[in-house]
Image (cartoon, rainbow, N blue to C red; front, side):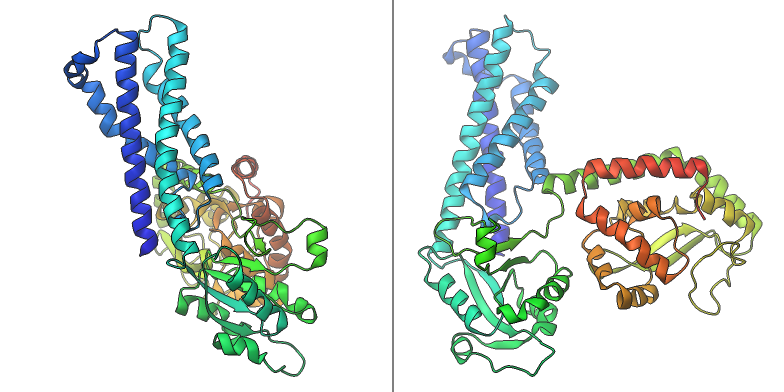
Length: 477
């Protein structure tokens, strides 16, 4: 709730700053270039462009800031990072605004364009960053004074966990960690006795197996892993489990080797050294651009392919009895089930004996269904899933829970894919193709994991280009 109100304050201050910057810029141009006297303020205020800019332009700035990720994690903002973000957004926004609205203005000389551009950049940045600096400083001050904090779960129960707790509690500037409790690391050997010192300062909430439930129950925002050297074999398992727990900040206590190799980076010289695990696969602006591209391309595809959509629907209905569309439950982002829509390519009783994967010369597939699968016509309705937000155009191919249970037994890293949205196409589909067995699903998995670790707008474009080649070559199945 506190974060929501701080976000609202940031938005209000950004809107007021943008309005003030536009007003000053408009008056600067009128007085400096059109030689209006300051006393003729009523002439400026009577200009409809002045009021149009006051209303519309601040909204554009807020959209740009939102795409940049400015309004996320507002309680954890760094003043230095705020400076960089504001400068970047100001430069991009002013250049776009200048070329979109002001380039065709009649100005006495080319130098006036440069002066106008620099004036708007300077004024907008100064006003915006000043307001943000005041807001961010006030928030940081409240965190340091222990008026604001972040519910934190400590993984570990022995001397290193206790020492980490002391370091964070006694550091020169409080970092905001409110410890809800700690959990013990499960080991294959006999259970070890918990350190009484740690149990004396916070409650023991269970073992690592309880972590996902504890994160949801206590609204945990940060997890700190402070385990002994003998327990390091559990780190991968713990991180894999935390991967499905939403946008929780994960930190690990470093050892001497990590410090020597330069792996430790701290946000402040006053804070204890911890390795922060980056769970964001792309920058925030890339997530925003990816979602916008998904929406625009899906709308464009549904409009352009509407004749194909209609003809395909008619042929499906005419060539085999049953519904035109087929909706099947798949598991998607963060393990949530959703209905994936396709044109029906199988006979209606195709899975009367239970789930089965498609294969070469599959008798369950209708004659027209074979053609649809070769050129991916059956997947056109999935653009509707993309519009709803349950899928992306590029991601990984979602599976049914029945098959996920089998895959995870052999390849538990499959669950890592649930950090991203499933897609209509994928790097696994491009490089490997359709899978007819669970073994082939596991083989294809490595390509999808490779995509996830190298996600970018550029990678998506490459995969889309290859997918188009596959469609025209009829390499579907």
